[in-house]
Image 1 (cartoon, rainbow over the protein chains, first blue to last red):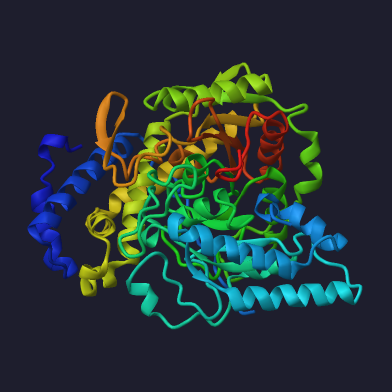
Image 2 (cartoon, helix red, strand yellow):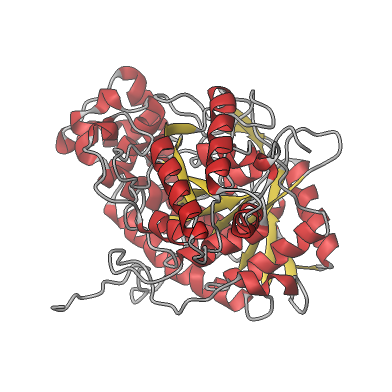
Length: 67
Length: 466
């Protein structure tokens, strides 16, 4: 489990931008970094919560038959 | 009749049905009020005056022929501009979407309200792409709180809050993903209903987060909430998240109030961090309802965190192409949150969705012993327009992402909620409580809100008319 100190938002931004085809101004980059750090802190709360492999995600797909 | 703007929707309908007033007079009065006040409160982005006049004339003609009129006959309403309105591009608060072709048809919820006799006045201001709790908008200007125009309406259904609180419409429709009906209800001092997830069709509305998007009404009386909600129920194959339920009307049952219901306040996560006013409102409501028990929703902070991650991820994915091609046309506040969301690992999202199932099951256990829960709606009264930070739990935090701290865990579980506004002597601005029920029990939340309204504890006066 990663810790806040290990999370490198700058590295995530640098890796993601070409993958997503996005560019960022320096001002926006600083704001995106802040949002990513907030999200990482949120994700720790979620990741640290133990759930079994069998736990089902909330969304359930409904197959669609011919009408 | 000079005080028509003080009538609620059912009051208008009674007057129109009895012939005391014509629907055309109602519409002209509403259009005059919009012309007079909207330059200040900035609630409307489109006024559909010709359509409203034509609709009113048709209603008056139907009455003259002796036809029965619907339960909302002549009641003027308006919709957040993410609802499709025939002839208007569905802008969803954005600059980009207003380049879309005009909608060919109305949202089904508009059609259903009109089927009950209500009259559409136009489309309402909102935070860009609904990723907002403030009611501010970089393209259309901030919605302004009719009770004090220096303050926010809350968002993202900001114009919906302003239009109803200002007496510009009797009912407004909004959307609520993480709190966007409940926050403007709290800041603007009106009643708002976020139904159970999957209850009302979302077809014909611009999405934000498919996992959490809900549509619902805001109004100045609980009976108007119930009447409009009743009119909007019903199946629609066009929304695949809608869950088939029988029609479960609520208006006729309101009179029962809180009688026989087990009501508790929410402790723990929901009893700390916010301003004293938020918790005083809960205490006042609980005392009026005789609710002495306090219960907790387990892991509410994690629920909020999971909602936050799912929102970022689904929001970022929805707007990916626009972020790539039209970045300069976004509100920077919205854009940079969406971009961050597009970068989050898929594993976080899936874990958050698994946690949602776990949380919903624990919440269901809580409702074995209690029928209705009371919690704060917002951590503070309406901040000033332009305010960027606030103090929560003793720490200065960004305002925009955190106004929904008390609403997010509730919508994460898909629970029906009525926001009911309370007022304190000496204060200009209100603050609401959330009245929360088990899934599909909108009737119970509305009954308890009705009890608070009937006892004078909660009320939604037109701004300037209190």
